[in-house]
Structures are given as structure tokens and as C-alpha cells.
Image 1 (cartoon, rainbow, N blue to C red):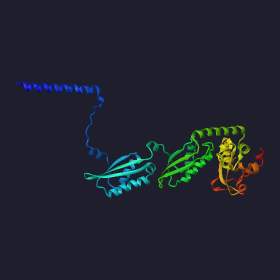
Image 2 (image 1 turned 90 degrees about the vertical axis):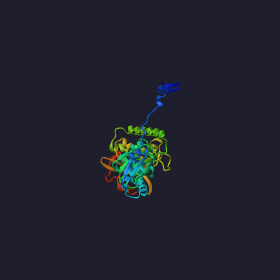
Image 3 (image 1 turned 120 degrees about the horizontal axis):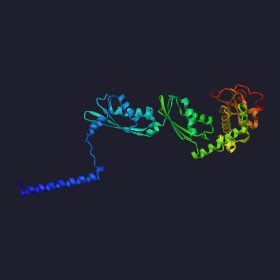
Length: 378
């Protein structure tokens, strides 16, 4: 038979159980979102299974490169029975990946490591800091060859972009080649961005067949201003083309030449926008380069291929054009129309120009065909 004391203890226990049940019920009703159950896992075991096994120097470099390719900020390497001097090899492997691997050279700020003993092996923790996000890396444009640079730069200029990044296969690419591609793209379409930008180029790594190229462009004007100027310039080019009408070939080219010469003052004072088609066609004043760009822009509206030539006139830096008419290339210098007239400065041969002009003939098409006698009177 249960004693009084025993019954009393049992009653107290029942009351405690009931109170606990009510408490748990309340938690379930009002604070269920804070209740969670996590399976316990040994931290050391988890780290071991997540680590990459490495046994030699080649494996070290591959493991670090893989971390970069997958844009990992932390990685663990398990080094058991490693063949080499661990700390020295680990430091050197990270440096080589950072400096020689194309992707790492482009996107990694620094790589650091911690090496520690774990049971019967070593574990290296690799920390990587990036200067480019994965989305920025994904946006890098791939070129199969540097010959595609000009087309790519043309798209960049047309969009008034201030930055672009490229990945291309070219062990010989240089910053000067990239800058030259920007210049050629601008000359090919002087209306694309109004002003030729200053260009800064970084190439990663210094050597190798696969290279990453960063290009920064500074136009000197706000994008909103450039957009308005571009719209105005395009409108002016269209007005001039409409004024020329249905003329084609040599007739269109001559009309464009005379229009620029008539409406634009040849100025050598280096005024703002003086070296642009905008200066020639909108503000009415430009140097030889601005005149050449304006003439080139009008030729494009008449489906006439033209080139902007950089050289010298009487030993002084000067710019003029080449135009392709009826299958033959000719020189045309709008800036000299005031002194020589179209007869002396439009559709001239290399031989005729060489008396006062000098240029890199190998960089431009040869001009050997005499113009027809009736071109200027057509």
C-alpha cells in the first residue's frame, strides 16, 4: 500500500508533468518558427570530406586554379604523403596561378593560405579575394582573334560605353594595338560617339596565349551630353545627304567634299571639338582631322568607302581622306580646298600627293588611278 508521503510525491510529479505539457503546447502554438532540430555532425569530419586531395605540386596548382574558375573565396586542400616542401610549394603555386593563369590574373586581388597539421596529414585553407564578380566575369566578351578588335570597339563606341572587357587568344596583343583599334573604329564612323575617347588598357597576364583585356574610355563629356551631341550630328549628316540628293559615286563624293569645304572654316587653333565631325558640321569650324571625319561621315551616307589618313603636309602633322570610287582609291583633302580647289585636292594619286604629303603607304590602299577629266564638271 502506497504511503501518504508517496502519494504526495506522485501528485507533485503529475502536476509538474501537466505544467510542462501546457508549456510545450504554448510554444508550439505561438513560437513554432523558432524551434528547429539540427543533426549533429563532427566538424572535423565535415572539413575532411570537403577538402580536395593533393599529393604533388601539379595538383596544388590545379586545385587553386579550380577554386578561381569556380569563383570560390575559401577552399580546403588535404595534403597526405605530399611529395615536396609544403609551405614553399603552396606559396609558389598560389603566386604562379595569380600571375600566370589568365583568369586569375584578370579577376583575383590576392591569394593567401593557412597550413596546419591535422592527425596524420596537413590541411591548407586557401583564401581568395576577387576584384571582379562572377557576373562581371560572365560578361567578358570572347574574341577568337585580335583581328576582331575594331568591330568590337566600334560597338563599344556606338553605345557610348566607358568600359569593356575582352578575352581573346593572342600571345602578341599589345595595349597600342587595342588603342589603334579604338582609333580606327572612331574614324570608320565619326558619328558613333562624337569625340574620340582617351583609352587606358590593361592586359592579363603579361604573357600567354589566352589574354584578358580591360579597356577604359574617357570621352571628356557626360553621357547625356554625348547623346544629345550625337543626335544633333546625325541630324546634320542626314541634312547634308538629303541636300546632295540622288547623286552617286564621284558626283556624290564631290558634292560632299564641296559642302564641307563651303560650310566649315579650316581652323588650326585646336578649339574644343575642332578635331571632330561635330566641330565641322555643327559648329562650323574644324582642323584637318575634323574636316576629314566630316567628309568621311558624309561619304558613308552615300555608301562610299573612305579612310582617314594621318600623315604630314609640308612636314607638319595633317589628316585627309582616301575614297573608293568606281573601284579605285583616291586622295581627297578638304582642308586644302580653299587654296588648291577641288582640282588640286580631290581624287588625287599617290604620286601627285607625294610632292608635299607624307604617310605610311603600307598602311593604306595604293592610289594609282588618274581621275577622269570630266569628274569636276559633272
